[in-house]
Image 1 (tube, helix red, strand yellow):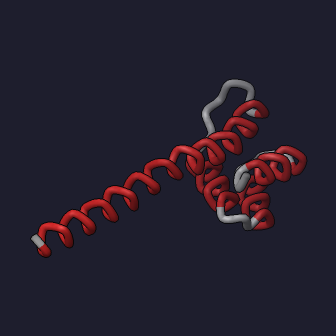
Image 2 (spheres, one colour):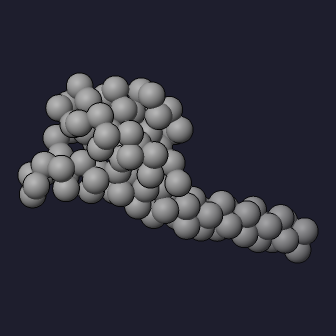
Length: 90
């Protein structure tokens, strides 16, 4: 019985850890999506290239400067770059 209690505890901890990761993942994805959506609005219907997506992921880490420079290198205007990178880590 002592072993089954230990196994139940491990399984409960694992379920909580995986549940927490799944709960946090959609929020992070939505933030990157908000960044990408701002850039796509500037592109007026065009889909953001991979370089924009990568810059927005960098913005998710809170590195606004690197995010903005990545977006401007991809041809996004400075104003849109700054505002898109600002919404990424929220």
